[in-house]
Length: 596
Image 1 (cartoon, rainbow, N blue to C red):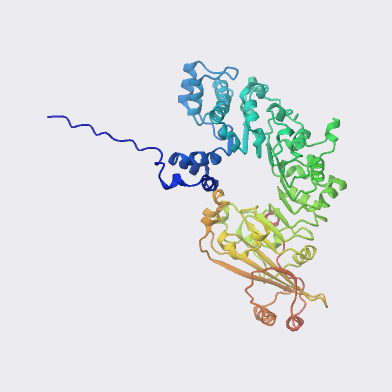
Image 2: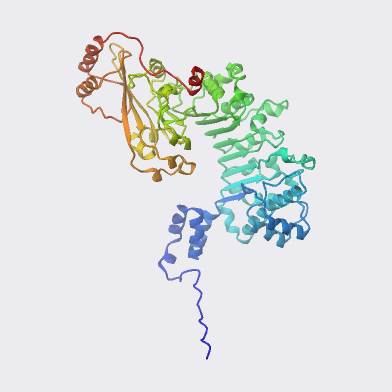
């Protein structure tokens, strides 16, 4: 029987013909299209169209990531390869075969027992992967030099190896030399490992990070286009870095400065004269401090004072904030005054434990006249605790919005309010101490409870979208009689009657469109006139005389009521006995446990 002829399959060309419509698009339009794409989409586009490949380079090469994988797992195959090749050392140069092998493995080892004999060769492989990544990027740039102009962000994560890493990474200096003049964002950091698992042979893993920017070939002369500097050195690194060097680089152009772990100690007072030289951060708009230790506060004030146009200050206190317990009473009045009287600050974020909050209360007793929005990490654990009574209201004259990012996945289990968290009847009252705090913050319009902390004032005040965003909060109105000084407070509090657990997952943090599902909500009225809760019939009469709907969603302060509406309130209130102060008391979970 004769054999059937083999079918010849023609391979599909990787690119469409030059006459296809997509190839005829102008280059400017292709660049605009690519600017809206993610990296993965840009890669797919580059595969689809030859002419779009160059345009896609702008997205693919906008960021360079040179770091270790987040998870390092034991892989037997890689161990066997190392054993066959006789092991590698950081001092040895990588052969093309070894480099290809390293790039083919995406993970290695965190579960390794570093005190065992396996620890050292795996440690060497970890560092060699870092070298292989540098060589990989450098080779790609040398093949197509046009890619250099597209690089705007560099994330550099140093592995912890014995001695000075910069002397061993010869190609790192060459790589940064190619891209440093175009960088907009420069992030430099280090991996954090548990040193308790290290044996005595690894005790010397203390890289000399002093003047690290000079080591990598990045100085103030190359930072003219740099607008974001993110320094995140782990606690493992020695405290011999010079913060003055960082500020010198940041002074000319940096608008966003982020300082991470261990920099708190570096910001402390120094004996050297250069530490006391004047600094000028004329363009700095945002300062973020992670794991801040209270001992570094004097230097923090020094940075703030040197940044006249600083608008956003974000402070993440060290660990649970316990370090602030003994320090809160020792804050220098001069230092506090520097922070309070800064004319440019418009947004203050403060994250930390209970002691850190007490320190913030002390600092914010006065001043901060231009701050319009604060972000506070409060001890709010369930939907039933989202009352204004539980929130610190700082006495800032221009404050408009308070954001409380308190949502966690545990919220879905706390739909029923515990007895201690329920307001005593009447539930629609407003506590007198809240009114006193609001008088000291005459422009406060809303307090919002959500999983986000990056909302603007306009976004937070747009209550029509609160349900879409699955957040709740309080809108504030205050009507004032200018002649008599009488005040009528009316709050609108949004209650989420049903909670979708998945929306509290961290992956939904920036994806509002995935949360747009109809849910059961209720707007609850909280009122107060002369320390008494206004009943619904009287409230309806007041708004009828005002000529507005009682179902308002636009907050306001110092609003006007017609005299007839004030008269309705007076006639109703005079008939009530003066039974004292009403309202929900400020009760925290810690207080509740102490009462049991």
